[in-house]
Image (cartoon, rainbow, N blue to C red):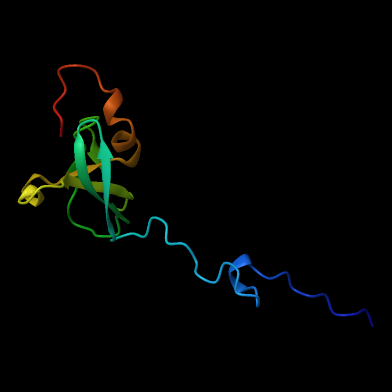
Length: 105
């Protein structure tokens, strides 16, 4: 019989306590504030699991299909929630590269 192979521990499972807290990265449904040349924005990743409503991306003017993961953003000022917009994730990342004549959101 061959000896049992030890399972390699994940860096967050080490007994010496190093890396005990797993870093929180982009968790769907959790808001974060992003600073950009066009101001501060509250951003939320959406899994796109909700059915029944489709949105139009202000970045590319195309429809965001139901079930497609995307980004929801709004200005980080009081009352900015009323300006909430749904973006394709790639369009949100590239919004600063849009040409002149395109609206901010």
